[in-house]
Length: 312
Image 1 (cartoon, rainbow, N blue to C red):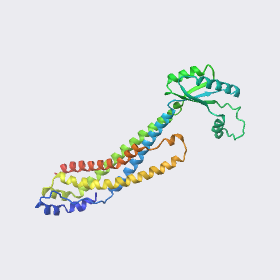
Image 2 (cartoon, rainbow, N blue to C red):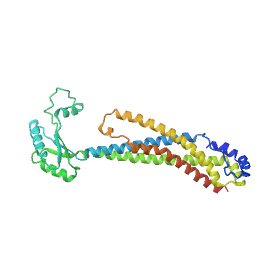
Image 3 (cartoon, rainbow, N blue to C red):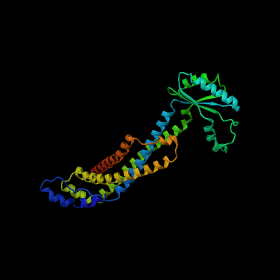
């Protein structure tokens, strides 16, 4: 807002020079200066990161939910290896004839051994067959794993394998989905707080500029200048500052997003791999600086007009 000093300082001279020609413009075009661009750049950068995080979490939850929608896991929980193998074979045979089952296969024992190695301290070659590791059967239904379909599967599985447990895969990740939803709400709340902080910064800067140039504004009023003409000076000034800060903030936010993306990509997690930004998400992120400019200009205009009405 410091660009108003030179603009308002030349206002009286410009008005006298333009009054005879009928030129309605009171001030020269605004020029970039002052701390406001940096304040807005910080706000926009934080908003971009928060919005990208919320969108990526939403995409991750949708991808995981779609992958697990028709997924069911059957566990054969028995300590006897021979009985476990017999029941697993019986369950597979029964499931492959079920009308709602699109696919069913047993997870290889080698994969299960690999999964439990970090927890049991076993090494390749150790005899883990005697350990009570459940046999796992991965089932893919033709539709969503609703409670009724799970009940029908249990009715098929339990008679041939009394120790079997039938669970929907999506149920295991229910706490994860709830946590993701909470994080999305937090991201939305952070964006709202940043918008309020931007409005507060613009309001304070506008009031400060009005106080510094109160005498000049009174002279302009006496020379015939209107409140709307003076408000347009502040709007133009804030538009330049907000546009410059918005572009800088967008660039900083994009750099942060790509850096975080590379870090999370190294985790190799299936759910993390679904947390990607798609083209509609990028368009939404690109619109953030434009929305920030509009918010800053509107706040400056309303603040100046309200202050000028009290000044007279």
